Length: 170
Image 1 (cartoon, rainbow, N blue to C red):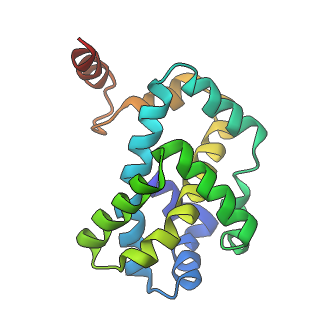
Image 2: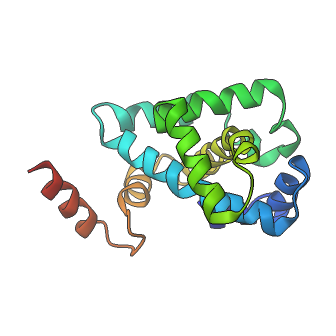
């Protein structure tokens, strides 16, 4: 997802994010690197719940999330931020969890916790935009999307991750 966002807008998405939050591109990239893993983990957990994957695919089909990649000027508009907060609610479950993610990312990046809290809904929109773009490009390739969501260690092999998940259940 991070690589997809780096390529968005012809490679200018990080610059757009940096401008929106008065950061340099290195800081914006650090924020993305720090925030996206927690969002991905929330997404993975959400899809493992009953009906979670179907709900995600429905949101990707019905929502216009790709606009966040195509039109970065809308990212910080009030309606977009509200949309991002709803996404965070689904992915992370609570404001407390969002605050925890911002705090951990702040410690890792040196960026202020308050700034990261402001960025979280925007980054959630970017994450959904990236998933939406991949979903539509792959023409609803459930296998490809499932594989990328379930490959928790990023090694390209889903089997070990599914096995670890099964071990946790039993």
